[in-house]
Image (cartoon, rainbow, N blue to C red):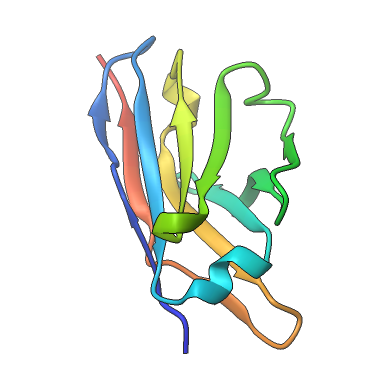
Length: 115
């Protein structure tokens, strides 16, 4: 069983930055892509970004140019660097690792963008 643990959320003013982390409990982390999702208040969960096993990335249009996803295989950790944050980025952010056999999710970390 693999555990994913997100951290790094918090309260930030509009225009500010945060870096979220997603730490995996197993080295199989290096074999799979990692997705980031978010769920805002009263909204459905939406996909934000992905980083593939070999580092290829893709982003939702709403965050393109502001968010950057990366990964560190030695630490079994993925990151979501979020810059120029907007109030509409307020949400619980989740990391996800689909392996085919099982879909792993973290518990989420709250990001609140407010002045």
